Image: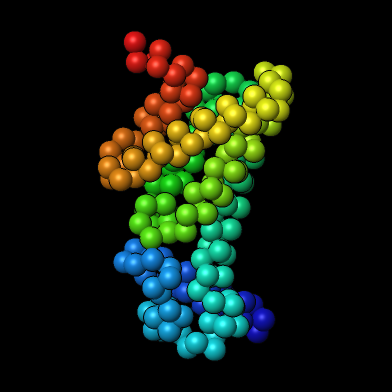
Length: 188
């Protein structure tokens, strides 16, 4: 009995998340109502409110879930050698590819601007930890370097998404890692 209830809860949350993402592809969060989400999901409003405080809470939960997934991906890779860093970047790009519509919506269209910052903070935290361990870079330099690299990488990824992911995740991982490691000299 409780397993059936749990499955129903998961389904309800899943359909509400999908409905919000679909609406975000059309308009900003401020123009979306709980009523619209419920109509699209075919769920009544009282059910919505048993799961979420409002549509901003639902968006926050979606972003938190993506962040947790990305942390799991990043945690399973070591950055100690260049090849590993490239593999980790490729895995993240594959994750984005597998969730293309969600990332197109949350990063490009009417998503929450704090989502991009959330992703940057996660990547920056992992990079700083690695650089301070491997290269013995001090905290201040590591912070600035990771800000520079991560903000560049995020914008390259946004450009890639906007161009319909015209390169494979592996090709993009090579490009991003070469830019991060060699800067302009990579183009020579």
